[in-house]
Image (tube, rainbow over all chains, first blue to last red; front, side, top):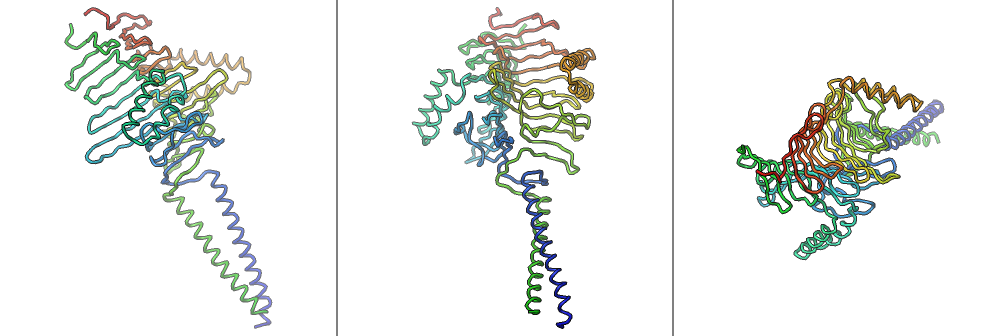
Length: 251
Length: 251
């Protein structure tokens, strides 16, 4: 036993060393591979994720894709604000400066027999709010859907957002509603709000319409096919009065 | 001593076996993970490629630096960019792997003010954009809306080839001369594009719906101008208004 154990021990010794070195090398290589993989290309058949941040090489966001829970608050000109309405699942776009400049959101639910649903795809004016978008809104079967174009203030949205933000932080109630209405009213007087200039789509009263409005968002020219199927073109004045109608029965 | 060594080697062997088994499990699970579904709470990426099982690209989601090259006729052309606009976004590819649309956005301050743009576009087969929702803004000169465009019946690939040749010319004067010549030849071959429909707002602060002929000349235009005046114009092929309807016409 002992006279054969010497060479066998050496062999075993060498084998163990080899195995050790082999295992350590494998682990080392795997570690490096895992590390570089984290910074390079990976391949998945499918991923489940709550949020994806597409970032520029400098780390600034260019796009966030997320569920509602992880949807980002509004970031514009370096400041963060609460969103008007709830955060939704979808996408938020960011310009090179890291400011939000558009997005796509969607939600819908039925609670206590009441249906609320909406979806929107928006591009924002630089430093401001949405200027063109596709929207769908529904409240219990009252639906509007279409293309919208808005004028926005030349002032950055931060001016309005700074006025509204403290009110958004208040608890819900009549006082909050009153103050919000007051701020929106004064913002409109200061020209900080927006004006819808174009709507092409359908409205809750079941009309299909093309609507062109003035800079104060008053409809001035309207093409309509109403819920009864009657078509007409209307010119309106700045008080909302129809001053001329063209219909299929005119001669 | 002998016995001690043997035990030591046995221990080492056991350790090695366990280690190798662990390596196996780790590799197997990594492999399994790569094949099946993977779950993340949140990921930061610079680019996502959505591919068919055969590896064909169908969608990229990326920052500006990693935008894919233009792919037309199965060939890549490094023609994107060059305008200084640092768009990020999504690029769509058809089942042949050729680019067929995209969703991109950009915006930032420039030495002389700012520039911002955003568009969701779908391309005509083997051609350029045929329908888009877009926003263009350079120092408050804004255009936003829906556009529908006729594109050439000829594929865009020879166009890309010519552009590559011209862009490779190092002499600026010669390059510009060739570019002008190229543009003229495109027009003379009738390979031009024509905007057929636009619904939105224009830099002159009018809200419009414009329908145009196959040469891109507006022939019917609904407008509410910056002062709020609504009108419907019929135009001839030379751009002359041949009939106007307004709210002030006598019935």
